[in-house]
Image 1 (cartoon, rainbow, N blue to C red):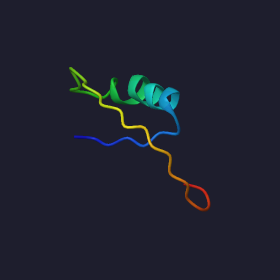
Image 2: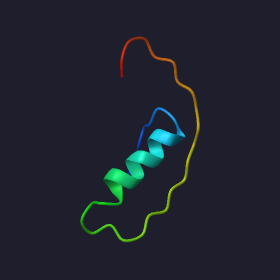
Image 3: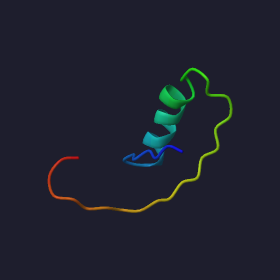
Image 4: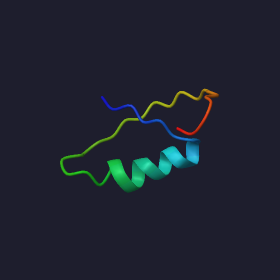
Amino acid sequence: RLRVVARDLTDFERVLRRRIMLLPGVGDVEANVLLSEEIRPGPL
């Protein structure tokens, strides 16, 4: 199980396609998306 934190859905899709799907040994990916807004002081 892998948790990915992204700025928005477009950013998540980009990470999924460009990073996760290209990892060696990755065959099938199932993604569940939970959208929430978190406001934190300062940069990530």
